Image 1 (spheres, rainbow, N blue to C red):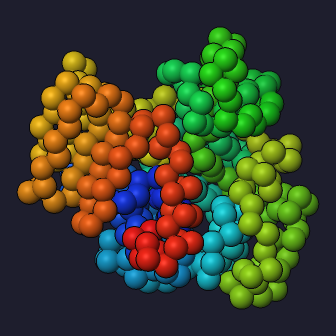
Image 2 (cartoon, rainbow, N blue to C red):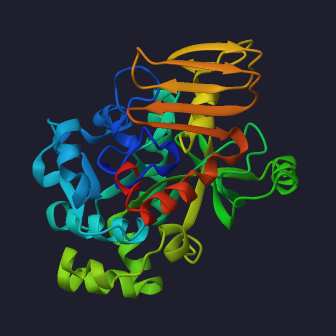
Length: 350
């Protein structure tokens, strides 16, 4: 399998630690010293057969940062998009580029750079099963995560007809993709036991996905075939889910459980790192009086954050910016950045 890491995201909901030239995939958010991008590359190396078989798609603005993060990665295996157009153009362009080098029967896997994976052995077993399914059924295989709680921040995949077992894992046709639900709908999804979280990871043979892109998204693939990266300015900004996965009849899902989290905002860090019984998650020097449910982060080990009477808040101190936000409003950090970018006196902090 040829793994491709999608590393062009901005990570805006981790602002102010995540900034334009230092997005979250370049950060070590768990205190390990290994960035999210480096951790993703490390877990895919065996599958890729070494650095020569691993690819990264990123933005031109972040290309040099990727080189610094992954110095062993061959330069020609970094694809730098001239501008961000969401995941559908990224998938289409990288597939076409890899086909030029490795052929149309190559099996590709796409992996966001910002995921946490708990059990690497089960993860690798899952990818072996996905490869087998992709080759036997001309399938576009999605990895569905068995939900452990009624999450409202993830999309869902409903499984349809069972089609057999691959690598010890049951596979199903995709019945439908569901948008991020409200709490009541998420609880209904879990009760049916037919829904998985949409992980955004998928596996396919190159010729299968190019056939489907030509059928359902010719406005993306045709300009890329003709012009390559020079076509980016005329491509629609659209995700691979909307452009292809919700339309194709070749979508299959493997519902799996290898310990997974989409590190989308500060609350995800608490899910990952906060131990039972701890009143707060403290990633920095914190003195709290009557404070519970807080996530406290300071990038400078010498900075002291003091809280009194606080509950369910996120407090982040990075260089010259301090963010204080209620836990249930972290999705609105993106709105803050739009305000900052609109005001010249603050724009440099976005």
